[in-house]
Length: 430
Image (cartoon, rainbow, N blue to C red; front, side, top):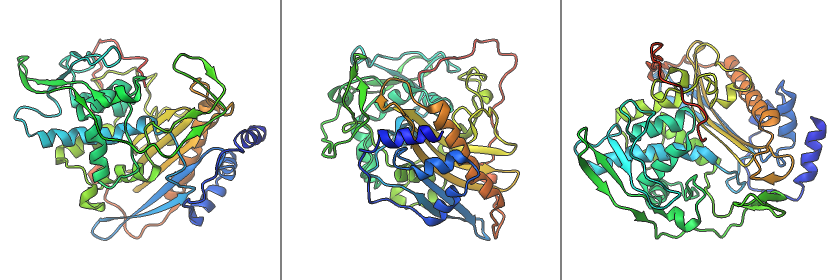
């Protein structure tokens, strides 16, 4: 492991170091004293691994009102990481919000939605075999995006919201540095500006509402150049011995990501401007599928051996298919280009513990991007598990003046129908 660390240090010595970062000595001490050697080594070499961590303590008062204290390690909005699938979290919230804004009788998150085709990459969608009625819906997209991080579900929510609304709304909420301008379809910048038309249908197949194809004419600020690595594979799968250019891709700073999840779970704890316009039922729906396991879900019926309970729960994953008794994690993860990200709210109902943990780490020892050869299994996931356990074990010992009432997050989860003989869903594009 020491040789690996030294190799990465040499490999990334020319990466610019960002001076404007947030680091609290309190969290730094916890990480440096972790019983995990891997955590201590990566913390010591934080710049090579582009490590950022936010640990949020939650303390309740005598009225059970939560109070939050964020602790930071090497957090810097200018230290770029590819947000990967974490962009699915704000899009799910924006999708539910847009449904409310539309105010169309007969249209809600469960209503059938069908998409037109813009081009050979952005194809139409009329059916969804993973849903109970065989048709697509916003609810089904959110389920798939949260349960196993399905990419097509993200693309459909992107098309539903349109590129223009996504960015205008998030900026209006105060997230000025967020940029979500790419689908996961290998499209050009201009192609990503165009989104498919769609139709909401009633149970008889009659169109209730249609939205035409849209094109975003708003400009983006690409003045900050972001290049990484010593080489990359291009869209033709040819090795280019130059850094990959992230200047024009999705951007979601870690603090914004943490704040978005906090605003969903604790809307009263953020300003009114930063709250999504959601109903009580919408919040409950998000809570359920942010924390439900694939093995508990009937539609989609995922292969629970491939998509096990901790599959998208990185702080409890690494060789541990099940979470500790009484623990639920409300979170969204992402992985791409050697980056791993997890924004989580962890609840231990058995021990009456709650906290948030958000982090990103970069594990790509060969310096080549877009080659699907990253150090996820050997370094990334083991590190995030050890990081998660370091904070979890600290929280188990941390004294609280008032024992929290966590009943708000007690969910009546689904149970897999053992008599269901349908084949399971495998090999999701995520």
